[in-house]
Image (cartoon, rainbow, N blue to C red; front, side, top):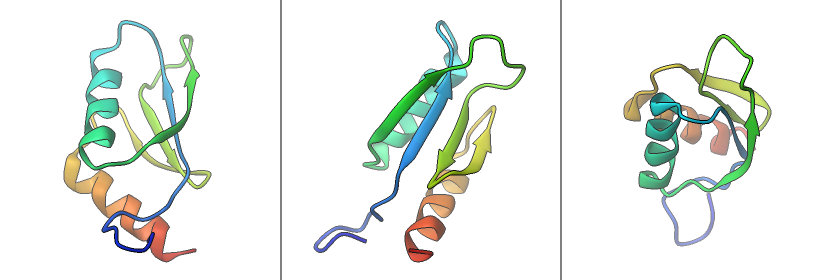
Length: 80
C-alpha cells in the first residue's frame, strides 16, 4: 500500500469494448475504490467482457462485484 493510503499500489488493466454497460460498471467500481486503470484494452471481438487484470493476473470477468474486486486488489497489493 502506498503510505497514508488504504488502497494498494497495483497495476490494473481493464479489457473492454464500446457500448458495454458491464464495462462501464466495472470502470465505475474501480473509480469508486480509488483504483486508477493503467491501461484500457479494446477487446471488441472477445466473448467475455469486461475483464480486469491486476498485476498481470485476471481477477474478474463479466459482472464484477465490488466486494470481490476489493478483495482481489488487496490480495495483489499484499503480494508485492
